[in-house]
Image 1 (cartoon, rainbow, N blue to C red):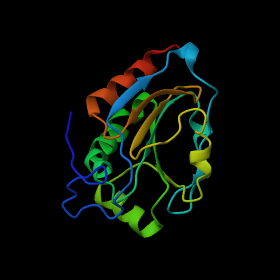
Image 2: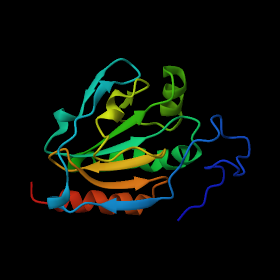
Image 3: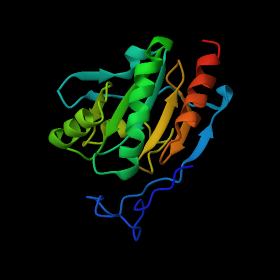
Length: 179
């Protein structure tokens, strides 16, 4: 597991944290058995270019949702892995979606350009998309990564900095399920 200082108040931020005091998870994971998954969730909004995003268009595929913001150190660490997964797994029916509750368009688009993010991010400063997850898989840390099954139900969650191999295994498990 990667260690990262500065994710909680009092940590050594080395000057990289523009929003000190946010809560980052510990990298813990949870997976739900098919029979234990709740109702499907639909995330809608617009990306930072004003293009509508609606996860219901991806029903039948696996969707990975990642919460982030530009000044979040673990978000910056995991961004290259997420971009690679989006590029490498698209042909398998895997979609990625960012969810950003903090940044204005300038900061978000600079992050996306810097890390060559090939997937959309919902500008969720209103909290509307995040609200769709309340009661299902509340977002209590940034980053949080969710894997939605083919029906749009939360199948797995990583709180905090993700490990690429862990996320790949979660995606593989959901892809292997009968549609």
